[in-house]
Figure (cartoon, rainbow, N blue to C red):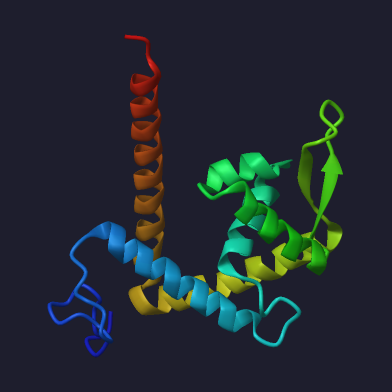
Length: 171
């Protein structure tokens, strides 16, 4: 990493942000920076005003068709917030709602062909971002970073699942 780039975890902080002394906050700020960079990539496109919350909902729906309520639970947001994101995505025609056969009230959020094209475009933007990361820290370091993030995600999910089982176990 170049020496002239100030670090968020430096004692003095960066751009008025207090110094960061834990991984959670570093990851949070990295997520904000990534959202901002991807927003720059979308500038001038039909998707330039898409909110990060809409992107998260879209990504969640793209992984698996599910109801708005299930998506809201997975993202830890209210059903109303999820519904608002869905409405914005419907206007862009990147998702559609499909009735569930067993329950006419619930609707599945389904990615449209236009949504799949948008997803492919986003994948290219993410590749560009990852190339920037590789230039900043080196290709090998990026591979190691990705692997370590994956390990931490799996470990954290397993610990969360284990804790949930303990909380729900009869006493």
